[in-house]
Length: 270
Image 1 (cartoon, helix red, strand yellow):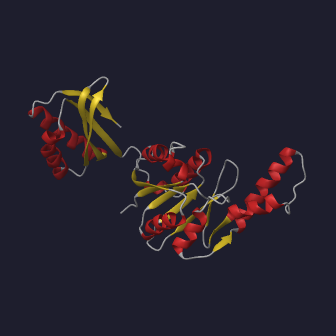
Image 2 (cartoon, one colour):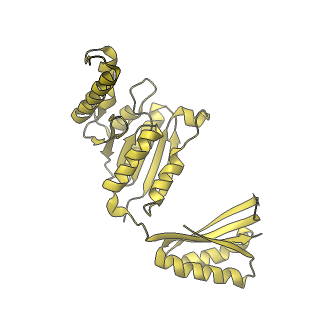
């Protein structure tokens, strides 16, 4: 079986509402473009015990999990330490991370027209951003070279840790999807087809949904709305799965709706 994909978002600012999360819709978009989907997501505040628990649970499974945020070196960044605690390993300065961090510091010094001083306190502190759980692998950061890291858990799960900044996180995740997980891509092999059912109630459609799902290797979904500006009260009813299975299941779904005398609106293919 192919692994499922999960997402962990770390940060008090999301839970407090100071910032709107952008990672969930973007990661779903990146996966969807490759015929993949997000199985679950979790938001955790800047609390070491909660972060460690969330990571320990993820490491115990077999999913591919992207973890966004908290990998910096300020007092409110805990993700690196929590990952090590969840795995029961030490934190160590990763040699390749140290090289990349120094390269970045030299670049900044050159841009500012000042000599690079590796002993300057702020430069010494920056190496903490390369202190990862023992055995971690580098995740390249094309934005500013400061890397993220990946770890494998005892259950086979692969967790990839990237910054909370979208401008850094999203290219890093996209690169992982296209390099490490290219073999899982199902582009043009996975489809979602749905139809707008006007004025419908889910209870009345449930038997048909159950019959379609029992008779075809697809997932059936319903998205109700009560105040749509165009369709008013309606349900978007559909199926998703392999293209061939979706085609036959959707045909049976439409036939079942027509047999019930349902008023149908536009069809949607994704």
